[in-house]
Length: 97
Image (cartoon, rainbow, N blue to C red):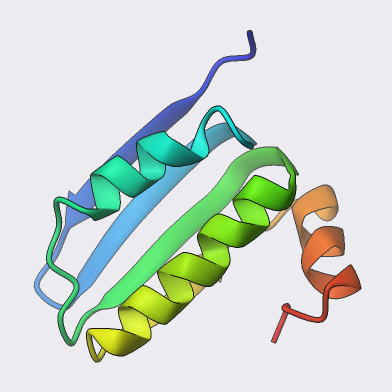
């Protein structure tokens, strides 16, 4: 099984989640568990995906869910550090905007 790591840092108006490994069916629940424990009301949730080289449909679904969740809480979702394969998934599904 490939290595997977997720780390959260909580700042005044921003929650930064750094992910390393594959964003897939097996790993997405770990991110959901983490985001369920931090308040994002009126804050920015930033996902640093520089360490993510692969994302499947589960990862895409997670990003959609996080986007809806942050908007409902009055916040915003930002993605940073997208590698080629995850970026291509977002482009192909027209969700890269």
